[in-house]
Length: 229
Image (cartoon, rainbow, N blue to C red; front, side, top):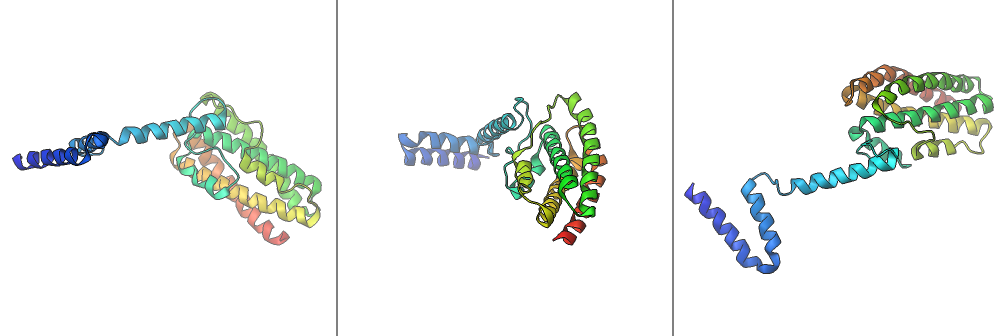
C-alpha cells in the first residue's frame, strides 16, 4: 500500500516539476486519470461530443428537433449510408423507410408507363402495390411515436431516382432494375438491423413483418436485372 502511494505521489510531483506552470492543465488531467484508474476524466468530453453530434444530426434529418438517429443525414454515398444502419435510431429508421417507399412507388409508376418489357412493367406495378401498403402500415407505427414522415425523397433516394431522367427503352429498363436492386439491398440491410434490435417493440415488429417482402423484392430485382442488362 505504502509503495503504491509513494509511486503515485512521485509520479505527480515529477510531472509538475517537468511541465512547469505552462503545463498545469496536463498535470491536472494526468492526475485525474491516475486517481480514477478508468479514464473517467476523458469520458465526459467524449460523451458531450457524441451527444452534440447526435442532436445536430437529428435536427438536420427530421427538422422536428427530436433525437432521430446517430447517423448523419443520408447523403448520396450508398456504402457510407449503409454503414450508419448499426447505430440508426428508430425515428430515423421510420423516416428512411418512408422515403424508400416513396422512391419505389414513384419509380414503379414510371416503369409501368415507360418500359416495353412485360416483366419490368409487372415488377413496377408490384412495387407500387406493395410499397403503398407498406407505407400505410408504416404510418400506424410512426404516428403514435410522434414521428413525422418525410414528404420528399431523402438525398440518397433522390440520387437514385435521378438516374432514370431522360432514359427510355432498354436503357430505362437497365437503369430502373439497377436502382431497384440497390434500393432493396439497402432496405434489407436496414430492416435486418431493426428486426433484431429496435428500441421500440412496434418498430421491431414492423421491421420483422416487412423483411420477408423486401428480401423477395431484392431477389426478383436481381433476376430481372440480369435479363435486361
